[in-house]
Image (tube, rainbow, N blue to C red):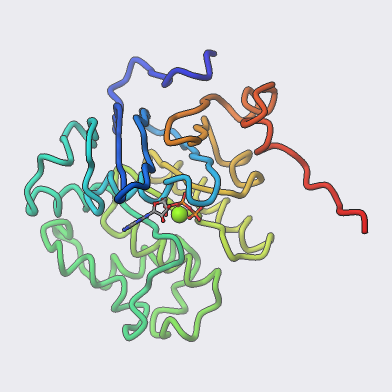
Amino acid sequence: MDITKPYRTTKTPLIEIYGLRKSFGSNEVLKGFDLLLNPNENLVILGKSGSGKSVLIKCLVGLVDVDEGKVIVLGKSIPDLNQKELDYIRTEVGFLFQGSALYDSMTVRENLQFPLRRHPERMQHFNEEKLVREALRSVGLEYAIDLMPAELSGGMKRRVALARMLILQPKIILYDEPTSGLDPITANEIIQLILRIQRDYNAASLIITHDMDCARVISNRMIILQDGINYAEGTYTELSKSTDPKVKAFFKEVQPISL
Ligand SMILES: Nc1ncnc2c1ncn2[C@@H]1O[C@H](COP(=O)(O)OP(=O)(O)OP(=O)(O)O)[C@@H](O)[C@H]1O
Ligand SMILES: [Mg+2]
């Protein structure tokens, strides 16, 4: 596979990004970034801190305005949508923020009720309490329904945030650093949960991570965001064999410092 070209299958991509540019003042963050997300795949974005990964996924849900380029999600051009259309797209695209971003003054139940009450049309004929309990069950936390976020561990918070995102049954899921700040065992539980979500919900996911173990286990394909562009693309195995020093840097073992 040519790791410099976006990989395209015969199926219509769920996300298409072409030539995306975004600057903040003189800080050029994205300089012509391209990406395709295909149905039912887990696509990992790797990039150094500050390379623009969070900015990139915020552009996908209209939380950051685009300077130039095309951003098409489920066939809709995001920069051209009005607020109502954006609100609708956000029900189709689940977003797990960096950190968990639960509402601290609400119980776990209320946190999960929140998206349902904003989008009653998505409840169809289901009962709210049943949907809340099912979403919590799918992350193994039904027993925590009446707890406050302050009473949860970091891993539990991440799982509640996952349940709150799943409750609207999104077609695409965006994960911003899903394992950051977690110990390796809890991080692995979250990784297993993400794999199960891909299988059970038949959703496609874009996962931002620094965690190479997470990237190896979770990805069907990976993109390295470097210098504001899609610098390299391929499977974990393909990229791990790259001779490009900027790609190799991501796969380097950390060497002990000799004092
Ligand atoms: N709202 C904003 N206003 C001004 N500059 C911003 C804004 N959001 C992001 N930036 C800048 O854009 C650059 C990319 O930030 P971003 O948060 O996307 O990095 P990242 O790759 O997600 O890093 P990390 O791995 O540390 O989360 C940084 O230089 C940051 O300072
Ligand atoms: Mg970030």
